[in-house]
Length: 505
Image (cartoon, rainbow, N blue to C red; front, side):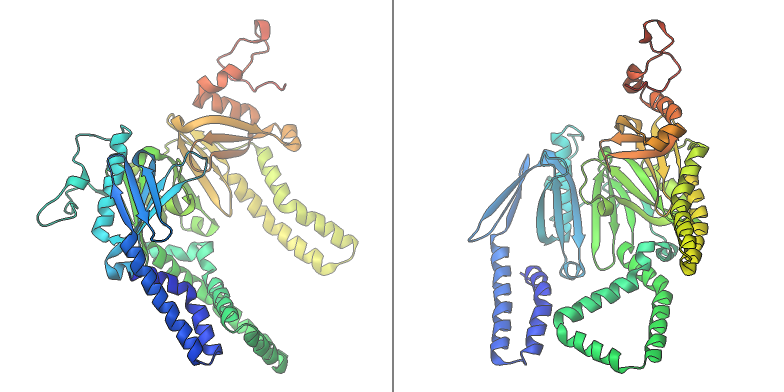
């Protein structure tokens, strides 16, 4: 009755305040505001009275509504994940939000159940019950294990096992020094500008044309020299505040990050004001990604994200570790999942030339045109950017690589956002080769490892065509070798032990 009205009131807060200020707090505006608040309170009471949920043997039912009633049934065997989230308001009231993601049968679709808000202990019990019964129904869990819904003690009416008694293994607890890595994240470094844009948008919504007219009048009446100095100072302050705001914002998001394992699932918890707990079944985790950017590479830091089948909002829900030391991250991967122990192959030298052409070529073209047109300033700018493109192209080439350690396939590419994806051999469901006209001239090809998880495929860019075919043949010979032809053999259809590139049709 409290959470619902407050959540709705937050969306109406700015219009209400604007109406009160612009309306001069007259009786009609005050009366309308009072009616709105009362209506929200009544709506919260009705929602609380009419919302019910029931966990059956094979399904979860959620019923809600008074005038417009709805009933949602989610088969437990199709439950993909159960997340528990607590905002600051929820934590003050001792409640949490339970979100159930279930497969709907359509690609990329899902039918979600949401319970807002149940007691914190009940939320944890619901997660355990739903995942346990789903495992029993699908034959992926021990049926002899007690059902968490039946666990009751005199001192614990919700059946939550005491700490340390539920088989939970803690793989990672975030050290305080890791919060400083927020200053290396390009996204978090832009926090001051995001805050400034948000404030500007709020002013525009509340004041509108009044604020715009006042700003225009002030700018036209002020001295240009003063405005130039003021703009330079503001930009300088924002630049200096970038790492400070980045660390603060990063800390609020990842505060108290922990990675635990229980009941065959990995549970990642994080957040200061809004505490979020995401549960990922290990059987659905088919690999992992290591992500970094140039600033993070200077400190040997990476981020860890799971490659999971059928996961919505993978960018946020698949996070297993925030940015931290690579050695520490690899230790966690080795314990919680399985670490890739192979060596990444370098790609041919022709791949370097292609990257230098892409990073330097456009600026060289602009340089030639600007010199022909005698545009000096454009020539200097293009020359400067062309020189900067050389280390970028080299770094992009050095990031290329692919490898196989007998159990896992790993592919790496990128520079400003470098990504190394490692997937289980059993997760590979296909291969795809793509060649442009220029790649064919250089004997290169893009090899995509197709998997039924994560992004659906991960590409080894500008790999040698012959070597990539041999690579795929070693990983999944039963899948690739039937398509390989030995032209020198009798009849032209016998297969050789050494893998050869496929013939063009």
